[in-house]
Length: 326
Ligand code: URA
Image (tube, rainbow, N blue to C red):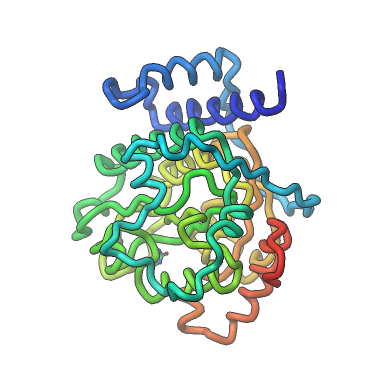
């Protein structure tokens, strides 16, 4: 099979896998392109979709690989994306400015797209958007732990580009996120935006940002192990669809969940770990490199550690091949 077709087939297979992870074997009828997408995916995934077996150990220190530039295809069919797709890709409704953005000083759109996005065919991006939208519907219904009725206003699913090379994973929504419906909208969000835009020279809307836990814990307390366990399938499903090359885990809960470890963030930060994206108790699937670093909210309390985070981000910048940022 030609490499491009093989890559597309693999992506479609991933979408199928993420549906299986959430128990969505059947796609909702009636959404645009669904029946074609469904049969294409099932055909593409075929009977040889990787069997999901019990996970053994999943994280091990990764070895940096040579950077392979992300192929960027500007597809003229972009204008054909339907409104739902556009909305999800553009992400921020006009009345909500992403926090911390200086419109004059924003990284260049095309340069950011060149390095942050994979440039998958539009149909694949569309399928990813649809898969994420279906997952969001599942999350809205979720009652797997008690947080859904402990005062949170809404589920905070995630925000950003579905075809990005890099995902940032935080802990749980706080008051601002709960009110607005997007992750990292408050003071910690402003700092995260600065890390992405000023530090990495990427646009915030070209990365993807989400949390381990989708409901705001009361009084912004740290989510319990049980709450994280109940919620983490949603995260794995998101990651399986997006299939990022790099995941930056922000703080202990995100890092410990993604690496299946109890080690402290202080010990783990600044190194790449290879993780399988199929989920916490599964093996197989594509591999991403996870780099733990301190959570922006921790940095607001401990600004001296910003230097360490910058050192960590420089490793990510180098790994992604972004020029002129370090
Ligand atoms: N802290 C997080 O971990 N996530 C948010 O969305 C906001 C603050």
